[in-house]
Length: 249
Image (tube, rainbow, N blue to C red; front, side):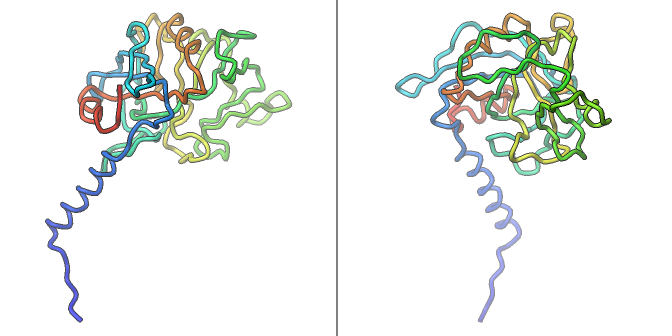
C-alpha cells in the first residue's frame, strides 16, 4: 500500500489556511449587546481611544456617547488570552511584560473604596477591605483570582496579594477577563482592570486600561451584565483587519 506525503509548501499552505479560517470563524458573541472598543495606533503605543457601542434589534452597533482617551501598558499591547483566537506564532501576554492584553474579553465585576457606586443592580460590586486579595504570584494556586479571607492577612502570600488601599488610581476598578478563571495559565498575565489613570493621563500602566475618573464612573454605570458586555482592544491595523469577520462595531 503506497503512502503519500504532501510537499512542504502545500502543507504550510494548508496550515495557514486552517489558522486563517479559525480567526475568520470567530465573531463577537451574538448575545453580547454592549461592546467597549479600545483602539491604539500600534502595538507599542500606550495611548488608546475608547468608545462604547450597543447592539440594536437589527444586530447593528450604535455608538453611545462620545469617545474618550485612556492609557495602556508602558510597553504597549500584546495578544492576550480571551474569547478571540490568537494568530499562529504571535507573541502573547506574560506576567510583568508591561503590555496590555489585546483581543476580545468579557468584563467582570467592580471593586472600590466607596460603600456603594452607581451601577446596574446586576453588576457585582465589592468594597475593598484589608481582607480582599488578588493574587499575582505565578506560583500561587490562586494566581489571577480574587479571594476574601476571614482573617487579617498573616502569611507572606496573603500580605503580598492584598488589593491596594489608599491609592486614588485603584479607588474604583472594573475587571477585564484576561486569562480568567477557570481557564487560567500561570504566568500569562494577572490583575488586568479598567481603573483611574495617574497624573491626569500622564502615566502609562503595567498592563491595565486607565482613564479619567469621570469616564470610568460613566462606563461602570453603563455596563449591564445582562447584555454580556465585551472589551475589544486592538491596534488600528488589526481592528481594521478583523472588523468585518469578527463582527466588531
